Length: 308
View (cartoon, rainbow, N blue to C red):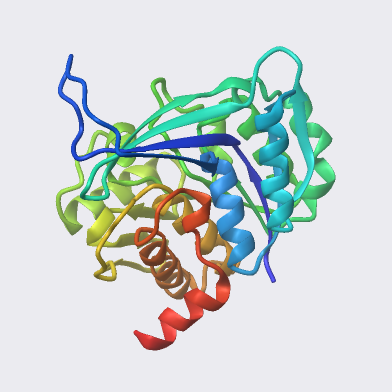
């Protein structure tokens, strides 16, 4: 059983189901509204836990009902929330999701307490980081917090995984990149970092070389319904996605990350099978509504794997 620590965001998601996305200045009718636990970090932790990993979480909530709801959601999945701190100045993060009839989404995120997470908060979590196999971080919390977590991880032989999502509006810290063992963007996030548009497998290989020049020799690029490309120093391959009818793509990428690290060996020797497992998990997620409610459990994923 892998031991995973996720540093990231905790958001209460409100989803608005609509026929199509509005044009600028247009008002459209919402035919269904639902709320559920979310946040990229929390989604990834839930995916890891449901895929069989022992999981802990580092993050921050507000002193409000939404924060209590998010803590309870972690507890419901047996995720250690001991290192979730509480901000006295801002509320818990939220996300408003517009979901069209084709299963595509647009998301507005209010960072709230997620953006107040500090290096000091992270250092309090040093015991759980040191005891992990993998530490995972994204960009819905400050980069300096992720850097602090990765510094502790690398000093203790723990493998670091950076999901650079959402795409950063500013440059990524050079120090954070140096501390990253494997980077896992989607195709748009990858292009925003490297300047290389993902159009085919050749562009993926060029991207892997660009990241290698940045000091990161291990890469996963998720490319939606086309699949996922992985590259290490010894192997690279594009693994096609499993064909399903998508109802809601929310949390598909987060499910992939969490499921992937739940299975990956620290030496990456099973990276292909870990990617395939994560693809199966994501294929289940997109067939359901909501973020965390859509994330499958281990027995469901294994059942799909055995059928394929």
